[in-house]
Amino acid sequence: MPLLVAPALPVGSLAAQEQPHLPVRSGLALRPWRDDDAPAVRAAFDCPAIQRWHVRRLDSDDEARSWTVQWADRWRDETAASWAVVDADDRPVGQVGLRDVLLTEASAQVSYWLLPAARGRGIATQALGALVRWSFTRAGLHRLALEHSTGNAASCRVAARTGFPVEGMRRGSVRHTDGWHDMHLHARLRTDGPV
Image (tube, rainbow, N blue to C red; front, top):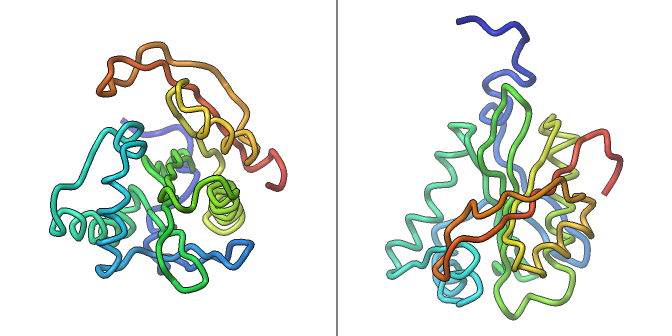
C-alpha cells in the first residue's frame, strides 16, 4: 500500500555518516560507545536507581560489552543511537540516546542516565541539550519525545530544563519491579526554538 506522503527523511540519513562526537558545555562530550567502556556500563547498571527506572541489570562483563557493541549496528540500521557522556578525561559518566528512530516521521524517543557520582550537577540537562541541538540541526529530525515514570522526579526536571513540555500521561502503561507506572509524555519539535 503506497504512502501518500514522502518519508520525512530518506533511508541513509544517519547511516551515510559516522556517528558524530558532540561537544557539551563544561568540558563534557558525547561520543560513540567503545568496548573498553564496558566496566562503566556495568557499574551504571549495578546502580539501584538505574535498575529501577530502566528495568534491567547487567550480570557480567560480557553482557556489558554486548551492550556497548550493539550501538554500532543500531546506528547503521537507523533504528537507534547511543552516546557515552564523557568527562574531560574521556571517562563515561552517563548516556544519552535516541530510541525508536522513525525516518519516515523524522522522530525518535530520547533516553538518558548518569552514574551516581555525576548526578546533581546539570550534566544530564547539558548532554540532552547537545543531543537535541544535533538532532534538529544536523540529523534533520522533526520531533523528539521523552517518557518517564511519574515517580521519577529527577527525569521530569531534566525534561523541563531541556525544553520538553509535558504533553500528557499514559496511565498504567509501563511495568516496573514495584508494579504498573503512569508515564509522563514530553516532546520537543524542531520549531520550538533553541535549547
